[in-house]
Image (tube, rainbow, N blue to C red; front, side, top):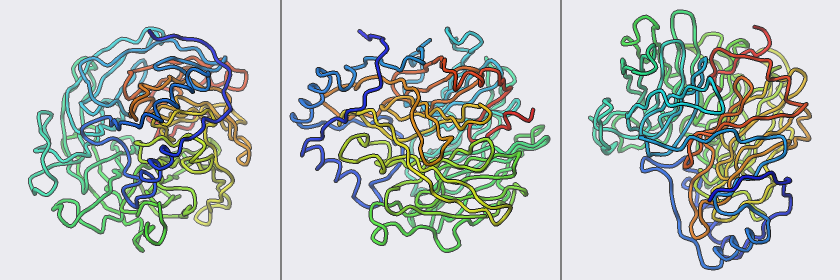
Length: 496
C-alpha cells in the first residue's frame, strides 16, 4: 500500500557500506563507460546488491532516514494531486512538452497525450505506439517532434531493433501532425548522423529549426563515424513538414572537444552534445556536450556560433542539460554522473560530484564568458539501491528570483533557489522511497517541469504525476500562463 504524508526535509546523510563504495567505484571510474547516459533501448536497469547493502537500506527505512518502499514523502509546501500509471506504453517514461490544456509525455515505446484541463484528474487523450528510444518529445503548433536514438530496421512505427553496423539501419527525427489530438498522424522522418538522443526547437513563423543532439560514433557504424563534433540542424516547413531536411552540421568542437580519459579520468570524451537549451528571444543557446559546456549565439539559426566553452575536469563526469535564468545572466548545467544507472546521492559521492553547476554569464555580446559560482545537489539521503541523478528541470517564473524545479530520478522532485548563485538552497521536494531494497533500479522522475501553476513529472516507472506548489516565494508564478512550453526552448515569460 502506498502511503502519503508530509515529512520534514531530512538532512542526515545515509552511511555507505564498504561494499557499496566498491560498487560505485566500478560504476563511476571506469573511463567512458562511467557516464553512458540514460537507460538503453531495453528500458530500466536492475542490478542485484549484496546482503549488506540490502540490510543497510532496510535499516535506513526503519530508522526514518529514508522513506519506505514506494512511500511518498514531500515538503509542506507541496501537494500531490494526481498520479496516472502507465497504460498501453510499458516502456521507460521520458520527457514532457505542453500546449494549451495538453501535456505530451514521451516513452521508449511511443508517446501519450493527456488532457490536463483539470490537473487533479488528467485524462488520456491518445497513446501512440512508435518504439525507438528515447522518444524525446517537443511540440510546435500542429507539429510534434520525436527523437529516435536506437538503431532501427526502418523509420516506421513498426520497426524493430537492428545493429548500427548495418547500413540500412535508421535513426533520427520523426514528425507527427497533432491537429487532431485524438488521432496523431506520422508525416515525416529525417535520418541524422548518430540518431537523435535529444532535440531542441528554434521555432519561426514559417519554419521550425530542430537542433539534433547525438553522440557515441564508431568506425564500425556506417551512419555514425567519428569525428562527430557537431549537431545536425533540420529545417521543417510548417506547411509542408514532409519536406523536412538536414540543412547544416555545424562543427562545435574543431579541436575535438574534451579528450576524456586518460587525460581527464572519470570525464566523458566529447563526441557530440547531449542536450541544448535555447532562449530565442535573446538569440542565445547553452549546450551540455558530454565533457564540455557551451554558450553560443543563434542569431542565424542555421549557423550557430560559439561564444564560450568551459570544462570541469574535477567534479563533472557528463554535461547533461542546461537551463538559463530569465535575465540571461546565469546558466545551470547538470552532471549526469553514473549515466542514470548508479546511486550517486550519498555520502561516498559527496555534494560536488553529480551536482548542478551554476555559472554566471558576464560580459556582453560575443565577449560573454561563463564563470563558475557554485554547485547544488540535493542533500536528502538516498539508499544505495536508488539510482539518483541530476536530470531535467525548468525555471519557475518569478520576477526578481531565480527558482527552478528539477527531476532527480529516485531523488524525486526538487524545488530550489539560485537567486544567489553562490548560495543555492532547496525550498521544497517530493519523492518516493526505494522501488526495492534488494536491487539497484532505475526509476523516479525523468522530467519535472512547472507549467501554468502546477508541477508535472514523468516518472520512469510510476507514471505521470501532478504536484501543486504553494509558497510565497513561488506563488507569483501562478499568474504566468503559457500557450506552449518546450522546456529546452525557453520562453520569454514576462515580455508577452
